[in-house]
Image 1: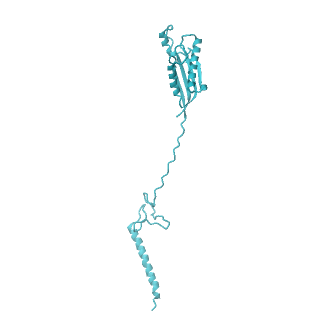
Image 2: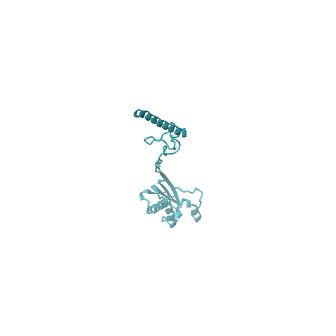
Length: 219
Protein backbone atom coordinates (compact mmCIF):
# COMPACT_ATOMS: atom_id res chain seq x y z
CA UNK A 1 0.00 0.00 0.00
CA UNK A 2 1.48 3.32 -1.04
CA UNK A 3 1.46 6.31 1.34
CA UNK A 4 3.22 8.83 -0.80
CA UNK A 5 0.17 11.05 -1.42
CA UNK A 6 -0.09 11.78 2.32
CA UNK A 7 3.34 13.37 2.67
CA UNK A 8 2.46 16.79 1.30
CA UNK A 9 -0.64 17.29 3.49
CA UNK A 10 1.33 16.06 6.49
CA UNK A 11 4.24 18.38 5.83
CA UNK A 12 1.86 21.24 5.33
CA UNK A 13 0.14 20.51 8.64
CA UNK A 14 3.46 20.43 10.47
CA UNK A 15 4.52 23.74 8.91
CA UNK A 16 1.24 25.33 9.88
CA UNK A 17 1.58 24.08 13.43
CA UNK A 18 5.10 25.51 13.72
CA UNK A 19 3.99 28.83 12.31
CA UNK A 20 1.12 29.00 14.76
CA UNK A 21 3.43 28.12 17.62
CA UNK A 22 5.93 30.86 16.65
CA UNK A 23 3.12 33.36 16.26
CA UNK A 24 1.73 32.43 19.66
CA UNK A 25 5.25 32.81 21.13
CA UNK A 26 5.49 36.26 19.66
CA UNK A 27 2.04 37.03 20.98
CA UNK A 28 3.05 35.81 24.42
CA UNK A 29 6.21 37.93 24.29
CA UNK A 30 4.15 40.92 23.31
CA UNK A 31 1.71 40.14 26.13
CA UNK A 32 4.60 39.90 28.62
CA UNK A 33 5.93 43.38 27.83
CA UNK A 34 4.71 45.84 25.25
CA UNK A 35 7.17 48.68 24.84
CA UNK A 36 5.89 52.03 25.87
CA UNK A 37 7.71 55.31 25.66
CA UNK A 38 11.48 54.89 25.80
CA UNK A 39 11.34 51.09 26.28
CA UNK A 40 13.11 48.24 24.50
CA UNK A 41 11.51 45.14 23.03
CA UNK A 42 12.12 42.18 25.34
CA UNK A 43 11.50 38.51 24.72
CA UNK A 44 9.73 36.14 27.10
CA UNK A 45 12.99 35.69 29.01
CA UNK A 46 13.15 39.46 29.64
CA UNK A 47 16.18 39.74 27.39
CA UNK A 48 16.53 42.60 24.97
CA UNK A 49 15.89 41.57 21.42
CA UNK A 50 18.74 42.27 19.04
CA UNK A 51 19.11 41.86 15.33
CA UNK A 52 21.85 39.95 13.54
CA UNK A 53 24.11 43.01 13.80
CA UNK A 54 23.76 43.17 17.58
CA UNK A 55 21.57 46.27 17.50
CA UNK A 56 18.78 46.55 20.10
CA UNK A 57 15.18 46.63 19.01
CA UNK A 58 13.34 49.64 20.36
CA UNK A 59 10.12 51.46 19.76
CA UNK A 60 9.65 54.68 17.85
CA UNK A 61 10.33 56.85 20.89
CA UNK A 62 14.04 56.19 20.90
CA UNK A 63 16.29 54.55 23.48
CA UNK A 64 15.17 54.29 27.10
CA UNK A 65 16.44 56.76 29.67
CA UNK A 66 19.46 55.89 31.78
CA UNK A 67 22.63 54.06 30.82
CA UNK A 68 22.50 50.45 29.64
CA UNK A 69 23.84 48.26 26.89
CA UNK A 70 21.57 49.89 24.33
CA UNK A 71 22.14 53.39 25.57
CA UNK A 72 25.73 53.46 26.84
CA UNK A 73 27.05 56.39 28.82
CA UNK A 74 29.07 58.69 26.55
CA UNK A 75 32.75 58.81 27.25
CA UNK A 76 33.69 61.71 29.45
CA UNK A 77 35.41 64.45 27.55
CA UNK A 78 38.45 66.02 29.07
CA UNK A 79 38.11 69.70 29.69
CA UNK A 80 40.42 71.80 27.60
CA UNK A 81 43.31 73.10 29.68
CA UNK A 82 42.93 76.70 30.75
CA UNK A 83 45.47 78.99 29.23
CA UNK A 84 46.27 81.84 31.56
CA UNK A 85 47.25 85.06 29.92
CA UNK A 86 50.58 86.43 30.98
CA UNK A 87 50.25 89.22 33.48
CA UNK A 88 50.90 92.64 32.04
CA UNK A 89 53.94 94.46 33.43
CA UNK A 90 53.08 96.89 36.19
CA UNK A 91 54.63 100.33 36.12
CA UNK A 92 56.46 101.11 39.33
CA UNK A 93 57.00 104.67 40.55
CA UNK A 94 58.36 105.11 44.05
CA UNK A 95 59.71 108.21 45.73
CA UNK A 96 61.52 108.01 49.06
CA UNK A 97 62.80 110.95 51.09
CA UNK A 98 65.78 110.24 53.34
CA UNK A 99 66.65 112.45 56.26
CA UNK A 100 70.11 113.81 55.47
CA UNK A 101 70.94 113.80 59.19
CA UNK A 102 70.29 110.04 59.14
CA UNK A 103 72.43 109.52 56.06
CA UNK A 104 75.28 111.87 56.96
CA UNK A 105 76.86 113.71 59.85
CA UNK A 106 76.20 117.43 59.90
CA UNK A 107 78.00 119.20 57.05
CA UNK A 108 79.39 115.88 55.73
CA UNK A 109 78.80 113.73 52.63
CA UNK A 110 80.10 110.36 53.94
CA UNK A 111 77.34 107.84 54.65
CA UNK A 112 76.79 106.93 58.28
CA UNK A 113 75.98 103.33 59.33
CA UNK A 114 72.37 104.41 59.88
CA UNK A 115 72.37 105.85 56.36
CA UNK A 116 73.61 102.58 54.88
CA UNK A 117 70.88 100.67 56.70
CA UNK A 118 68.24 103.01 55.27
CA UNK A 119 69.59 102.56 51.74
CA UNK A 120 69.78 98.79 52.22
CA UNK A 121 66.04 98.76 52.91
CA UNK A 122 65.42 100.75 49.74
CA UNK A 123 67.65 98.47 47.64
CA UNK A 124 65.77 95.46 49.00
CA UNK A 125 62.59 96.78 47.40
CA UNK A 126 64.15 96.59 43.94
CA UNK A 127 63.87 92.81 43.72
CA UNK A 128 61.77 91.80 40.71
CA UNK A 129 61.75 95.35 39.35
CA UNK A 130 63.21 96.15 35.95
CA UNK A 131 64.71 99.49 36.90
CA UNK A 132 64.37 102.14 34.22
CA UNK A 133 65.81 105.06 36.18
CA UNK A 134 66.70 106.20 39.67
CA UNK A 135 67.11 109.89 40.42
CA UNK A 136 68.88 110.98 43.61
CA UNK A 137 68.45 114.66 44.48
CA UNK A 138 70.32 116.33 47.38
CA UNK A 139 69.04 119.30 49.39
CA UNK A 140 70.46 121.50 52.19
CA UNK A 141 69.21 124.02 54.69
CA UNK A 142 69.82 127.75 54.31
CA UNK A 143 72.95 128.04 56.45
CA UNK A 144 76.05 128.51 54.32
CA UNK A 145 76.61 130.17 50.99
CA UNK A 146 74.60 129.20 47.93
CA UNK A 147 77.72 127.88 46.23
CA UNK A 148 78.75 125.80 49.22
CA UNK A 149 75.28 124.32 49.70
CA UNK A 150 75.01 123.47 46.00
CA UNK A 151 78.27 121.52 46.11
CA UNK A 152 77.29 119.76 49.38
CA UNK A 153 73.95 118.65 47.95
CA UNK A 154 75.68 117.25 44.84
CA UNK A 155 78.25 115.30 46.90
CA UNK A 156 75.55 113.77 49.07
CA UNK A 157 73.52 112.67 46.02
CA UNK A 158 76.68 111.16 44.52
CA UNK A 159 77.32 109.20 47.76
CA UNK A 160 73.83 107.70 47.53
CA UNK A 161 74.42 106.69 43.92
CA UNK A 162 77.76 105.05 44.72
CA UNK A 163 76.18 103.00 47.48
CA UNK A 164 73.27 101.80 45.31
CA UNK A 165 75.65 100.83 42.52
CA UNK A 166 77.68 98.84 45.08
CA UNK A 167 74.44 97.01 45.86
CA UNK A 168 74.02 95.92 42.25
CA UNK A 169 72.10 98.75 40.60
CA UNK A 170 73.36 99.50 37.10
CA UNK A 171 75.37 102.76 37.12
CA UNK A 172 73.69 104.02 33.95
CA UNK A 173 70.30 103.73 35.69
CA UNK A 174 71.17 106.19 38.48
CA UNK A 175 71.26 109.93 37.92
CA UNK A 176 72.11 112.59 40.51
CA UNK A 177 71.30 116.23 41.01
CA UNK A 178 71.99 118.83 43.67
CA UNK A 179 69.44 121.52 44.47
CA UNK A 180 71.32 123.20 47.31
CA UNK A 181 69.02 125.32 49.47
CA UNK A 182 66.63 126.28 46.66
CA UNK A 183 63.78 123.89 47.55
CA UNK A 184 63.23 124.01 51.31
CA UNK A 185 60.45 122.02 52.94
CA UNK A 186 60.06 124.47 55.82
CA UNK A 187 58.08 127.60 55.20
CA UNK A 188 59.38 131.12 55.52
CA UNK A 189 59.09 132.21 59.12
CA UNK A 190 59.13 128.66 60.55
CA UNK A 191 62.72 128.65 61.80
CA UNK A 192 63.68 132.22 62.49
CA UNK A 193 66.93 133.32 64.05
CA UNK A 194 70.60 132.81 63.62
CA UNK A 195 72.31 129.44 63.53
CA UNK A 196 71.78 127.66 66.83
CA UNK A 197 71.06 124.12 67.91
CA UNK A 198 67.37 124.91 68.10
CA UNK A 199 67.20 126.51 64.65
CA UNK A 200 69.36 123.79 63.07
CA UNK A 201 66.97 121.16 64.48
CA UNK A 202 64.03 123.13 63.13
CA UNK A 203 65.55 123.14 59.63
CA UNK A 204 66.17 119.39 59.64
CA UNK A 205 63.41 118.63 57.05
CA UNK A 206 65.29 120.81 54.53
CA UNK A 207 68.40 118.63 54.80
CA UNK A 208 67.37 115.58 52.80
CA UNK A 209 68.05 113.34 49.83
CA UNK A 210 65.09 112.35 47.66
CA UNK A 211 65.35 109.13 45.66
CA UNK A 212 62.77 108.45 42.94
CA UNK A 213 62.54 105.09 41.21
CA UNK A 214 60.73 104.27 37.95
CA UNK A 215 60.54 100.81 36.39
CA UNK A 216 58.26 97.84 35.71
CA UNK A 217 57.37 94.77 37.71
CA UNK A 218 55.72 91.54 36.49
CA UNK A 219 52.63 90.62 38.52
